[in-house]
Length: 497
Image (cartoon, rainbow, N blue to C red):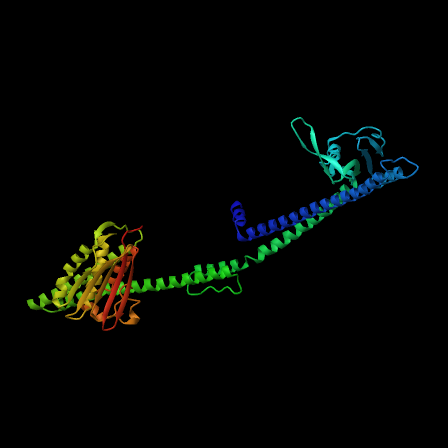
């Protein structure tokens, strides 16, 4: 049960569900919080702006009446009380002497009110202030009563704490209006908005769950289809390509890649079957020949010694041929193993090639073939001399075997700062263009009859190619029928495992 749950959690479907659901929740909540905060801030700003506007009008009236509030000449006192009732708050008016000339609550009226906020407005350091009181239930707004006449204001203070004065055309505070207003209606409105938002949040959560579930069922559908087809392939139907119609580009890419893999597997399987067939045929042919020769001797009585010697010689040749095939097969198997360790050592490539040509020279001399080594410089590289000698030896021997009598073989050696190059050219029969891509395959022969005459097994170039690839090198072939063949080998000077 636990394993099944963990498997479900790790599924692509669950990841889509959780990702979409969480993304939707984050988006909805972020938008809701932003909307609520913006709304609350805007309503508070509107409330403050409304109060400040009323206070500015009141300040102008107070200034016009020269701070005389209780008088038969005006009804300013009643207007202030009426404004306080409309705002559901308290209004306090302070003159330039910090005397409270009006308090709608009459608590501070006739007293002096000296506070930091009032003082800063009086001396011109502040153009008004707003702050909240009693756990955000009230706001206190301080509005200066400004005089537009030219005044003298302090601008600097020396070490004796005596201010210096300059004339200024700026407005001077003649008093301060303090308005304390309840914001209970804003709190009630915000609470109502919060309750409505909670309902919307619940609705959005439900919608997000439904949409996330639908998306988690729809989006992985191509993957499930692909998985079913892969299971069908796993049952052994390698010859059936995977086709997923109208799918995502990523799924289509995976499908194309897997079809390429199955195609290569089919090629490898075909090559393996052909290889097994070729091995069986090549190993059976010498045995069949030996069986025929032995039966011929056994069926005859009083076999002459010359015939006996001839037949035994033929049997010995077939045994040598069988041994060569087995040796080449074992060599190829060893090279095929990825775990094969190379015995890397620093080798003089010039000396190695000279030794190889010295061994092959007698075979070439029998047919009048000239072997030439052309070396541009002394070259030292990190290689496995045994395996790479086998590779170069196969190339040079083939150049001699499939050459014309009296022809030539040229071995060219050169290097740059990173690689050394060995080029083996001959004046032989050449390789047809349609056969050049197959010559490195095991047991492949361009001319089977000629190969058997020369003692070839069809494994030499396969061994050569594997040895070169083990050294992180490359081999290229250029040939033209009737004009000869050129193999070019590139090997790194420094081996990197």
